[in-house]
Length: 383
Image (cartoon, rainbow, N blue to C red; front, top):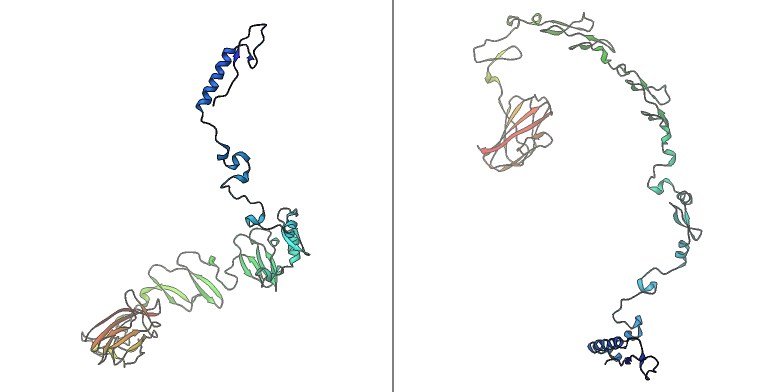
């Protein structure tokens, strides 16, 4: 509904206006304004009825809003720690940097680490060092310079040993406070040989008397070292041809016929006299002796061999033994002893199953480098 505005008119000078009429200088302009306002009011929808509005539209109260978030107003609303005397006391403290909180004499207080340590009266066992006490620590002040050593001077007593001069070595000396001293190297200080005794390539160091060493120069090309009781060192270099002998000087028994060989005892012998093969009686735990003549060992097994060993006593470097094991009437398992035989790649100690009537063939080799026999190969074949 349009607003009922008064009408504005121009009144001639000296005349009185009619009641309800406003007198203004430009009545036509004001009347046009009234018309415009009425036009706007006619185009705007009517105002809402207050009865249709929510309560908050007229009250302006937050509590009249619908769907508002929960706003806590107490510590319980947010599960917070209630205020108590301890918290109040702690809040009232004025600690400095590095202070710790301590309950002392029934009250909370801030203390320095030193004060806390004194109050707790800590012992070595309290910090997991039950076998170490402060009295047993070596103070850093013991060290004064580069190269200093800390050594014992008595029971439970440590002392500083300064570094020696360049080239000196550390030696035992019971006369010093620490039992040690730095001294020039003179062959080790305990009967060692001074390396300065060597003068040239090929020099030998030989004894000339008890606890006495001397240099022995190298001989000339082709010479050999020989025992010489007249020489100061008991040895001398001599020409090699002075020690050769003609075959005629050696006594040889027997007559060669082109099929024999010369033994180390100076006799000729036929190969048939050599025992190339030997037989070892069956045992579940046999040990083969390498010094017995015959490098081919035959065993007729009537049951399992659980630990076959080869002794190292008397074995020669590079010696090879062949082990031939026949399974007689029964199947049998053969296992080589781990304590006596080393294995090579791809070769197992067993057990190796040998069917009845078949043969297990194995080869072992001795080496002085390892002082052990090595299992080179194991095969099972028909007899």
